[in-house]
Image 1 (cartoon, helix red, strand yellow):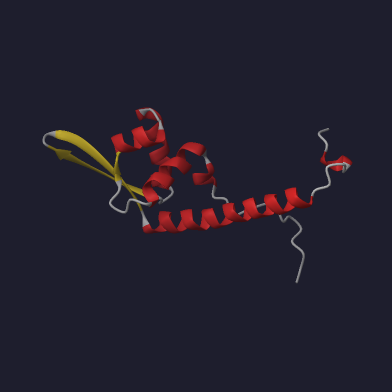
Image 2 (cartoon, one colour):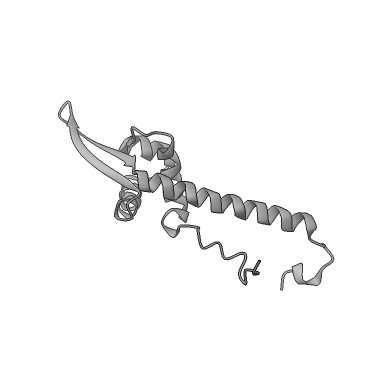
Length: 121
């Protein structure tokens, strides 16, 4: 079995959702197949309208979410849903993140605290 020259590169960490706000948005949506309203996401993720709009644009461009706009009792309503592709990419991302945690835990358990290479420069 060949040795991976960069075992801690974690290429599967998708940069689109690795950003804190977008990770929160996708996490909020993954358990809600019917989606969430724009206002629900503002509340759940602690974002401003402008920040949420910008992050949703990035997620929509990358194929993670669909955004639909409609009127409900003459009031505008925006709903956001995770796409099938977005859901799968998120699950793949979580698998890589779980590997990061396993690797870090294994290294922390076996690390020699007297090893000079572990000290800050």
